[in-house]
Image (cartoon, rainbow, N blue to C red; front, side, top):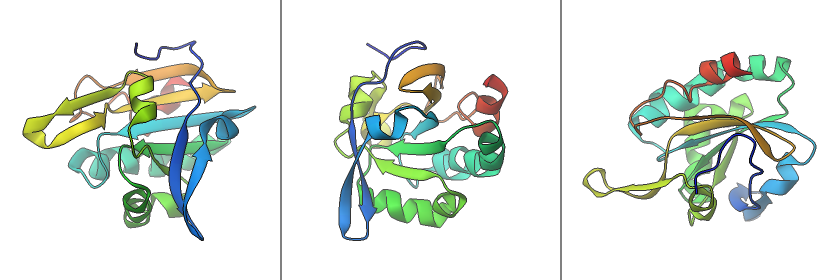
Length: 162
């Protein structure tokens, strides 16, 4: 079942690289009592993800802050080392965007956002989407119809929706 507006996000454990190596990040801890924007990409270092999706949230980060968003999280079905390097390479980390790895794709599958596209070499990946979550409940959800599109899931579109 695909997650919908009004649904509570399931518990999930993500990975990030910390001072001592990979660390577990519990989604519930990031969402409790907070307003968070989560956006997901099919893959780190892939075309539209790198040239459009991440930059749209870097451009709009200050505007989200001004609207009371506590954190912007980027999720991808990649390992935490790739997410760390990609965050640094794109400037997302310096902009204050949290880069989290859904390494096994468990969260992505649990919310029904997984897909596989063997011709493109994308196996067990995430649909491109963005959502506003308040205290764990999805308030706004924008899912692209194609992984190559970044229109309704871009930072500017999410700002317009909130």
